[in-house]
Length: 431
Image: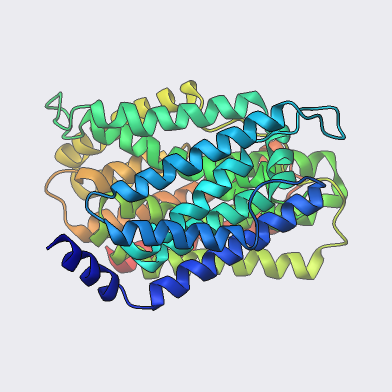
């Protein structure tokens, strides 16, 4: 019976997986051999060995797939041979004076061996993904080493902190209200902080390590994803220091405020998808309107950009102080929204929406999306969001004028007034 089952397994796989594993082994072998040739090293494996290893792994798996004892035995034999080769290389000295060994050779040979059973056992994308990922990691040696050397230790600690707050702390927090003042739970408070921090952190990393210096509007765009308030203040200060960069500062502030709409839409979507879908045409339209103002003014008035980046260094958004401040604001604003709606009704909620524009509006908007503010209609929540964004534009215009010493001028005030009017008009139409 075992022999019959084995024959059935071999025949049922068809020829396509076998052609795939040979092709992937050949592709990986070409990349591996080219890499070693450029490095001036001789290592076991290559354009002939890797297809044979893939065939051997696939054949041993097909002969006995459950349990794959033959595949495991072949892996032991391959590992022993690679260990002997590694031991032999430790006694040799390369041209650089170092021992002529490395882990890339044994790892690559094992991957080539496993391409075969992966191509036969799983969907094709698994084998293709394994091969492509291994090839990219193998051939991007210089790029990856340069990236590792360019990353500060503080950034590695920040990445570890990000994994800690998302993967460890978040699942442990209770998802039940701990007070009668608000239905917000500790889990939702932390989730809100994680959502906003994740978007800001992604923008921070792109701006620091990817975007080239001097890309004025692109950096302003990422600054808006990070924080439109911070970007407004930084660009206003630059307009005060560098009169020649006035147009870039004005356009960048308007663009950062326009980017606020899609960023808020993403955050709302994480908590209330129907609310986000209802807001989508309004917020996308307002974002495009602001972007058109920024790009039009930049093309009309900008001179050749200077070499300096328009936004200087900003703090990492994953700091504990930042997280604590956001959590406190989120709880306080959610309580205020619930109390205001209960005591003063819709007009009180709209008034609070206008007041929160003076600071970070994320806690207010997330509190609306997470649990609402009691017995309020969907249209009131949507309008309150747009009132808050319109108010935020007004206060950003005030911040820009104050921090630039009035250098940002009437043009920026006019642009921000137009964006605020558009947001408030949308709120009226909805509410």
